[in-house]
Image 1: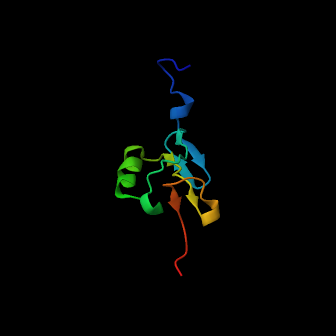
Image 2: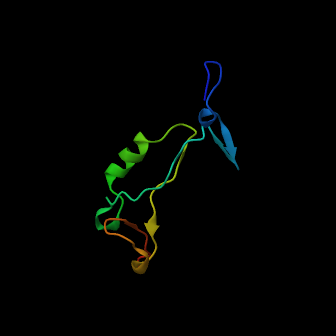
Image 3: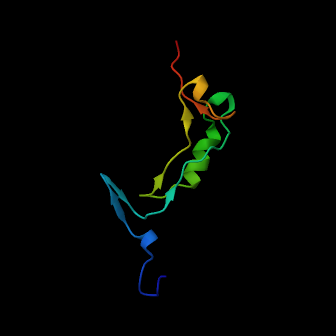
Length: 82
């Protein structure tokens, strides 16, 4: 527990490889199921911008790499166009 004279460990800087994080709080990946036609939508920019901090780490949602790998509807899908 932090006292008046100390900073909680979660709020202290951390070096992760080449990345200098300003704190140790990480937004974990989530499946938001808002990728209509399996494509990211403009509101995704707003969503992640609202949750981003300078020097913070945010892991965005998963993306399926094939038809058989897609676990749920309205999720992001990466494919190579023929």
